[in-house]
Image (cartoon, rainbow, N blue to C red):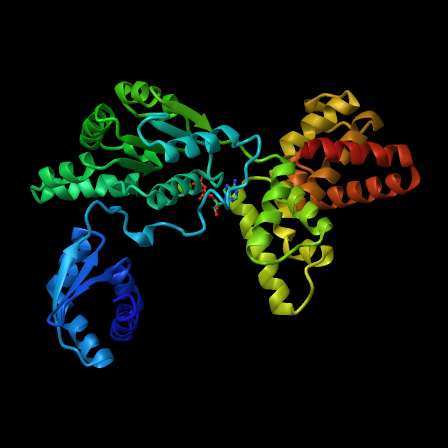
Amino acid sequence: MERLWPPVLSEIERQLDGDRFRVLFQGTELVAYDGQTAEVAVPDRVQGDAISRGYLGTIRDAFVRVAGLAPEVRITIREKTEAIPPLVLNPSYTFENFVVGSSNRLAHAAAIAVADSPGLAYNPLFLHGSVGLGKTHLLQAICHAVIRRPRQLQILYLSCESFTNDFVSALERGQVENFRYKYRHVDVLLIDDIQFLAKTEKTQEEFFHTFNTLYNAQKQIILSSDSAPKDIPTLEERLVSRFKWGLVSSIDPPSLEMRVAILRNKARIRGLEFPPDVVQFIAETVTSNIRELEGAVLKLLAYAKLTERPVDLALAREVLQDYLRAPLRRVTIDGIVQRVTQAFGVKLADIQGKRRTKSVSLPRQVCMYLARSLTDHSLEEIGGYFGGRDHTTVIAALDRVKLLRERDPAFSGLVDKLTKELFA
Ligand code: ADP
Ligand code: MG
């Protein structure tokens, strides 16, 4: 049977488009064949119903073509299997592929504990952190680990949005009982991005009861959010307090060291090794989150392939220019003025005023110079900001600062120092 089913499946795949095939036939297997009847087990009822409604003939035809058999096809729902549509999980979001560092150590340890003993370790487990830091990865790693356990557990993983949609459509179709059965009979319930629950009252009410039922039955609940429970604006107090019954753990942005480790890991997964200076460069340049870090790696690899150039520092600098420029956009004229007036001991009003004494005109010129080199403002805008001067005045100021920098190393050092501070 193990040998018969794969070629039959391939034949079915030839008949259907790829997505439909995956949705319908992922996780199916031939569990019995007695010469007359072929019994095909499918992971869940939804999938089983869909096949029974329209694809029994397709299966039978495939048997005919592949093996010259024309069995009657019977579908059975595999007992106590995961209720996760397999498509939902990203196969690479596993514990093995998760790099652990100080910023996520607790969250990771808690996730492992929960996967090891669902319902017993921490309940609920609540993971929060800003975007791209690995919440979804950890939730799915728990799913993979639970699915791999010898004792099959009923597990449901979904986004908060799906939960809400599911509930709303159950309400509309008068099938709330089905909805309740589905959500209240699982061993492990994982809801990603629970902050979106905030919106509709009725859904919160329903979730509250789902939570209570599962919790009382010692079933595992795992939630993720972009902020801590108390910081989700419209979340009811009774839910906030329940979320804190178990373990609330934050995932913080990765340190430089960890970014380096993640980059090495991502390269390794792709069977590559980046030169150390490239790794260092990316880790220092792309600092916001891990998703961006991955994006940078992909972009770099794509360019290297496209231009047939080796992945070296020069290429990395070229490709990641956007990231290099990004911090420049964050410097504002206000920030520049604040920093410069402080350094030169002058007042804001002086800088924006008409006086031309050297004590105020030099800091004003430095401001214009920094504004020109560190922001996207035009000469006109810069002139306008500094007391309605026109663009020729700004150009003159830029020239003067450039000249002074060439002549006076101390002054040049000061300008560099201000620049650095503005980025810090
Ligand atoms: P979130 O759900 O918090 O927005 P994700 O879990 O989607 O973030 O993570 C974004 C990307 O970064 C994913 O591709 C994920 O695999 C990767 N990632 C996040 N944290 C880690 C980590 N610690 N080790 C390896 N990859 C990670
Ligand atoms: Mg996510």
